[in-house]
Length: 144
Image (cartoon, rainbow, N blue to C red; front, top):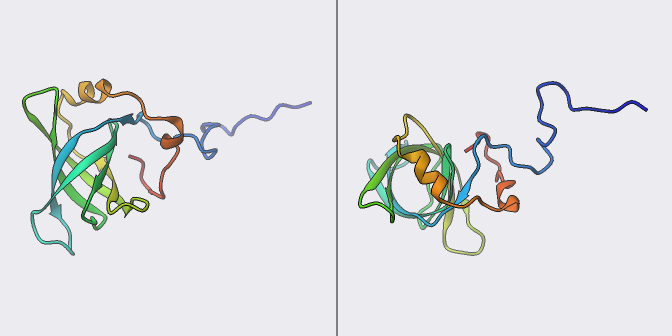
């Protein structure tokens, strides 16, 4: 009997509900503000507050009360409870959808540009997200 293997260059877990991201997401409870830097439909320097759901070296998922038009560049000002300073990050919102029956929007953001050197240490402080949550790509074309 001949054994079947995954085609060359493919991860056998891909497409079977497993996480397709390059970096592990970590559950976190970070508060932040954001400024919209560019969008055809928004006013310059539109501002909002958000709560992070999870964080990885590649992106962040946030909850906010305002709908965010995508794609759009955002500057995130992250409040770090373990440090006496904030961290500024640049990201691109790739998806925005209503968060269940709550009056919030869930926004998937991919980081762009060079991240601060202390960022990797920040990500490692938070515990890994659960497997079920990790498999939810929520229709994003790009991975965060």
